[in-house]
Amino acid sequence: VGRVVDLAFERWMYLNSKKMKGNTHDETYASYKPRKVNILVMGGSVTMGVLCASTPVADTIKGPGKTFARRDCAWPARFNYLIHSILGFEPHDIFQVDVLTLGGTNSETATTIWDLSLMPKNTPYPDIVIHGYATNDMHVLSELEAKKKNKTLEEMILQVNQVFIRKVLSPKLSGDGTCRRPLPLLVYYDDYLGNEQRKILETNAFAKATEILSSYYGFNLISYADAVRELVYSNTNEYWFSPSEWPERQVHPGMGMHIASSWLIAFNFLHLATTFCSMNISSNNHGDDVFSEIRKSNTVNTNYQATNGYPELRKTGIKYSGEPVQVLNSLPPELNDALTLDNISEIWKQEGEIGNSVTGKLECAKDAYEMM
Image 1: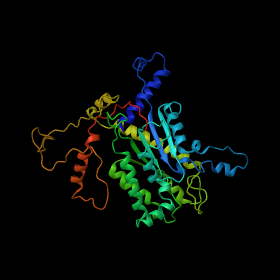
Image 2 (image 1 turned 45 degrees about the vertical axis):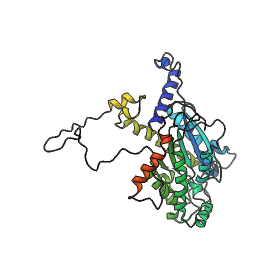
Image 3 (image 1 turned 120 degrees about the vertical axis):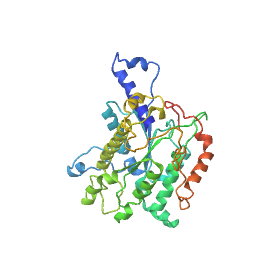
Image 4 (image 1 turned 90 degrees about the vertical axis):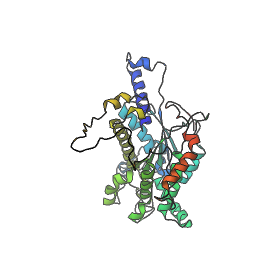
């Protein structure tokens, strides 16, 4: 999070200095042009904007209506306009939002795309990856595939998404092999409310599986479904926020969902940034960046005193028994039925040692710009 915030802030400062002639920042950026924050949105037909042009206004007021190209109507494009409008700039000025969406694709497809770098030419290596395959992971074809493998849909979703998550969050070397690419900030977006399944408990298979995975691997999970669930369940015939053909089978919501999604994602990103900036974090853990002085000034004085029988917080030279070790610089072991409290520590340690050939490399400079 810190690296993304640093990049965005430096880019914002640079663009502001161009706006304001005579600003003291002009000299700072005379020979240095901070790069954009690269966001890659991956998803299926919902994320692509299928049926996005469907609006209650057009349905109510008959007559010639405005048509929208799917991808321009969908939430990734709207988010791009919204976040830059909030920050006072034009789309793509601070965030380069690349969208890779295709109908019928799911998380299994996404793993192949990521692993083989099957991206459009000149797609930059992302700082943020947004996963938008929730609806297709819940597709009836996914259910049939799960049954073939003698698994529940939730089990298969967990299995398939874990593979994708581990691919994205595994460190990769730069193109020339001299440094380790920084891991992207992974964000999952759950847009699924139904109605591939009719039973409410069954519609939550993706939510339950990704909740387990996000807790275990520590990535961000944003749920549009949770944000509008009460509105939809209060009247399942509404179609401002959910698909318009209920109770017939339809999983593509209209424009209302895409407008709401752009605000929801923008809010979560801004909340993530402000929360990070308000944390009491030592600059020693994050290098010399634009927030170092802010972090130093935010140092909290606890005013703790070892009186009335209370111990010193830390005595030099004394090692206390049972204390935790430093968190390993590698992904935790894969979640499966064989992983237990008895073996997880040893497996994690062994896998971390195996991965040292990549994790041991110095991280590439934050302003490095590479293609996928």
